[in-house]
Amino acid sequence: MGKIITVCNQKGGTGKTTSAINIATYLAISGKKVVLVDLDPQANATSGIGLNKHSVTKSTYHVLLEEAELKDILLSTAVPNLSLAPSNLDLTGAEVELVGALGREYRLKRALQKEKGNFDFFIIDSPPSLSLLTINGLCAADSVIIPVQCEYYALEGLTQLSNTVKLVRDNLNPNLAIEGVLLTMADYRTNLTKEVIEEARNYFKEKVYQTVIPRNIRLTESPSYGKPIALYDKESLGAQKYEELCKEILGGNP
Image 1 (tube, rainbow, N blue to C red):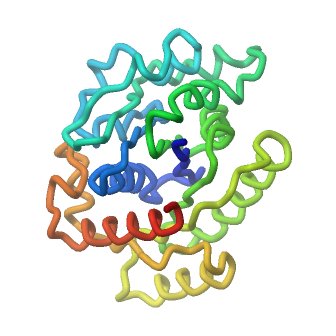
Image 2 (cartoon, rainbow, N blue to C red):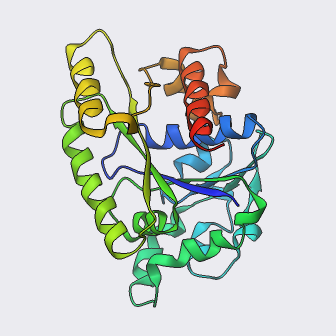
Image 3 (cartoon, helix red, strand yellow):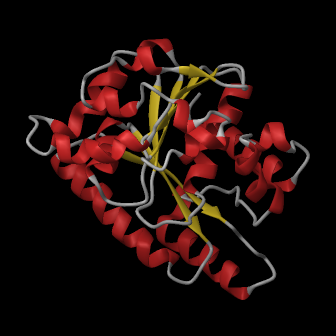
């Protein structure tokens, strides 16, 4: 049965979408059958993996409104073993349309459960907000990866997200676990980066991945070319680090 992991932080600019794309890519490269689920109306995961979000006709919006099955919207990507459940701007309307719907928090979960036997991993890129879309991602997930940028207010946001995970666990999804905390955008020339890494490890202990994602120009460039880092520049430091991270994730999910 496939494992569902949501990449989530309600704070923007944490490297969330970059991480979702590259984790999904390296899991697929390692031979796993993977679906990248774009749950963000900005559709950055869709364009970042190389598909035109403006030409998407069936998206996660149609799945949430139960107008399409997940298997009907899946698109193939340039990465073997990696499929995409795309997003587009239609998704912005989903929250309003679902306001009065019964069991609205579980729409994505029901859709993914039907396909769980056909894939090894589902990686969900959720919006940078605490919206109904994000709650759908957390209710569908077995676990959550929390990307945290090595910056001043990062740990404050991390505490808020931990509280949200606890609320979801207590009220909606009792099995939700923290898969790991991923430190991103590290600049080892600054004391701040070292302090954030130390504080995160003190607070979350072994939940913090050993792999830390550095600031890397090739990682920043790759989405504008519609390529994961493995296809854009597999020799770059960013690529090496996401490959290491994937091995860590697989180490905990044999």
